Image (tube, rainbow, N blue to C red; front, side, top):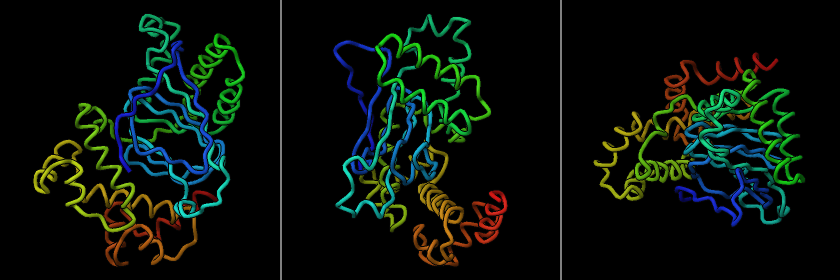
Length: 295
């Protein structure tokens, strides 16, 4: 898996925003980022989405708004990776890419556009769109495909207007913005590291391999990574593993030892210690509380 800056292809007749229909056997886009904002609706397929350093389950209807340069990817459940007879359109999504000033800087600075401008600024760390707004926006996105360019633009503005007014249904995804205000060179380097971690965090992770990806010695890489992310590389790997374990505790009834190994921990004692340190409670208590919240 290789993470890099994605250069979105523009058509010969420039439009104010782009709509892309994704239909494939499994989602295979790498962990990547781009300066354009992104509104993504999952139509079919299940698995995990990675946004910044957040891990969440996704399923049909999942809807997110991502800000500029926020790294992301969707991956089908790992059991699907080994399945060769998946339907060609088992993974489907509708993706809209647009810039923050897609109608011009002057338009976005008008009073009438202030709510939308504020929405796009607040989307830097991403929003998961929930509730009745999720259903409404999903329906309107699907209708966009059959419209002529100008009605499509008007309807897209209405989508953004709805999102800007229904803030209660917009759940922030990331909690730390500073990781994504790096230079392009640093952002590409760090996201090569994140891509490696995403591909390997449930297994053994090797510092020499990730240092090689960053074209540094192990010592230099550890100093560099701590400086630009405010966390050590070990902390990053542990964070992904703990969040993976949290998803399993919330969504499955798997025994603790199975969750321990499936999340990349080598033994149950270390798993329990790390989980309690990160979540301020042992995993059994976390599972009990999440069950109570959903009842």
